[in-house]
Image (cartoon, rainbow over all chains, first blue to last red; front, side, top):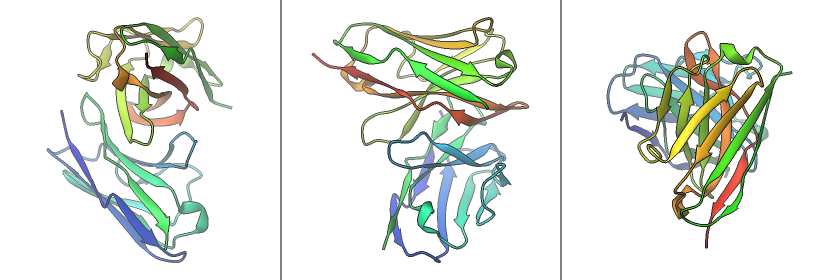
Length: 107
Length: 120
């Protein structure tokens, strides 16, 4: 199975900050990577697919980059509604796998 | 509006069985791959099982292989997960999720989930 290592596991930031979360795959996955946002008690929400394509309706302050084994999610100007947990997921091959998650907290 | 609604969760003893259902609406169900993803209390997301739109191809995480069976009834627009030999570490909220389509296996949308508690 492809392992996904996500970092950091948590971070503290202020509104207006630029935030970066990374995922590294244990083998090349081309651009078959998605990013999700999850708030407490809610289902995950798709933010980005194919490593860098913004899902419809997602604010443009979210962006994704990378291919192969190294990927990044960037929130350019953190808003209050962005405090949540973020997960990456590879869908290059079964079994599909997720990163461990990054909790973005208010500083 | 695309919607997924899970049901069938509950409290079950170790070694017991349970069948989860996911009712879909608002889209052509048979055209999309579907998956089950679970989240243990306070933990991250774990993909459990997936099935192609036709139902011909199924996939499982190693942790559930041989114990869980995914299936679908396209005429009823419903996805199922039959779980047997349940263990304490199967305790989680189980979400169904739709593959985004066009060969993409990112998930959108997700259902709100149904809680499965395995305990004596």
